[in-house]
Length: 190
Image 1 (cartoon, one colour):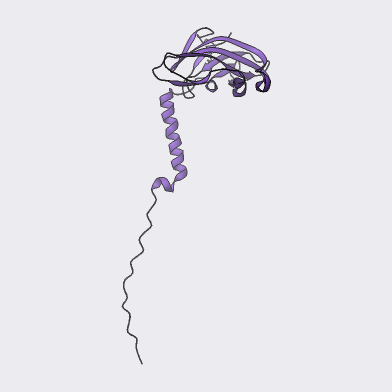
Image 2: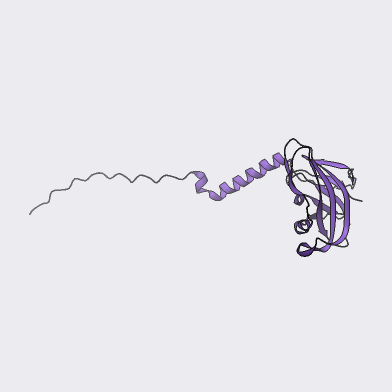
């Protein structure tokens, strides 16, 4: 019988392990959540903290014509028009669901850096403490309304914030903000 020579066995080495992905790549959802959380925390610290709610006592000391500061902005509400059924003209004409309340104001940057002003960071409250957001579409119907712009230190702008509230509701307070993260300042309405 013929025997075949034995082939020497060479010990096999395990294949090199695939490079392991780092923790952040393996946990994409958790990483995204942590990044979002960090952004919110940083923005809150920079912007000034919690938003304020309307005053509980109704004793807001700032009213129409009085300067009211929040962060880098000093707001002066100069006039409030309520009961307005429509604004704008032509294709930009907007009809209120209830009534438009037009809040005329001057905003001055009293800080040391440029700051963006947005009408959407301003809120109106009724006696039942219900919060009304600014109406973007109605605001856009007002021609040359500068309440969405960057204001440099020492400069001021005049503009109008528009709210659409039910016809039978009386506005009692505004809470005005220099940014969506600021604490806000309350202005009492007559």
